[in-house]
Amino acid sequence: GEGGEGSNIRKAIAFLKETDGLLKIEDILPFFPDFVLIDDFKEAICTSLEEYNHQIEDLKKEMGTATLAADNIRRDVAALSHRYVMIEPTTACCVCTRPLLQAAPACVPCSTPSADYGSPF
Picture 1: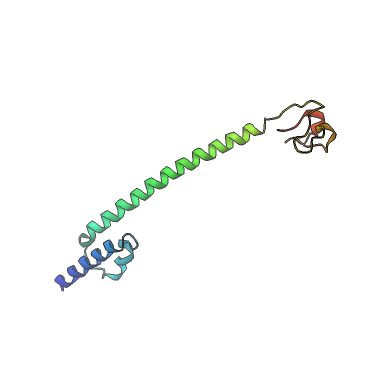
Picture 2: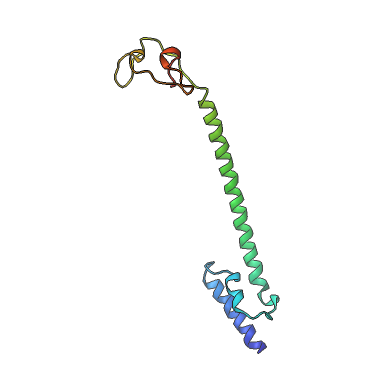
């Protein structure tokens, strides 16, 4: 009857609260008959919608942060493509100490041998 159905709804909503977000209102609605009034679940539905709204806002903030990070990375990569150093013929390699222009040629981003134009440090 009506009292039993209302009691079941209250028990279901109390159970939802005990799951601490593991189950949502939409997880249990299919187990109730179609004639159950939406008013019986109004509070739980509103709470669920508010939680989803908070999650959406958090995701928007994360997306904004990720977009800024991506923009910074793009800017850094663009700046690196214009970076180079001119070296003197006598400049020594910091690893093997041989003069750089006598070592195997390194290539700058445009593939020009460093012996002609310098090294991309």
